[in-house]
Amino acid sequence: MLLKDQVAIVTGAARGVGKGVATAFVKAGASVLIVDREVELGNATAAELGELGQVHFLPVDLADREALPAIMAEAVGRFGRLDTLVNAAQASAQLPLIETSIEAMNIAFDTGFWPTFLLMKAAYPHLVATQGSVINFGSGAGIQGMPTQASYGAAKEAIRSLSKTAAQEWGEQGVRVNVICPFALSPGVEQWRQHFPQAYEGQIAKVPLRRIGDPEADIGAAAVFLASSLSGYVTGQTLMVDGGQTRTF
Image: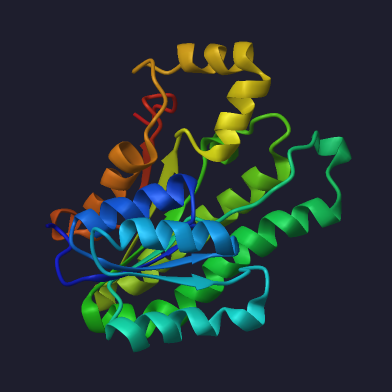
């Protein structure tokens, strides 16, 4: 129970990696506010995780900036505090760079970068009070520059840059900020596997551990570590939870 008595917000938590993180947090003892625009899936996830611990679902379209203040108000009002903010939500269009429009860029930044930026600012005073942390999500697609991932990679690298600045500025107040770059069987990857099985198997062959990550057991476990006291001296880091695809040493 590494997160016993703690409170977390997890965006994009109705399914995929976000759900995996939320599940791992609840099992570790945290009370979790699940935020997602998918109402039916969000309610189903909240009902499922409610069997394990304290969970509440708040339907919010993160691209609607006027709706964002309700997230912090709901978390603190319902659970009394905030220890961890997890920004896992992200949408994007996969297009070659030459076909990537301003509209496509806006989708990636409106659902990923801007909500991350605004929620971090809103969470700051609460995290100072609890000596809490922020866990943002980057991607190997941004670090490596993968084809058709121009808007997604740009938004993810902007999030990593923001995270590094926050880690520098907020460390004195005891607030830690870290980034996870995952490779996991999310709904998007599952669709990719179904439609392009050869490309999928080729990618798995490039993973030193020869498997794809599990949203809860692999990505969620890493997030629990970063949210817990076990990583109390870790901040400003990008943790590659991708089976060894990206080697940083």
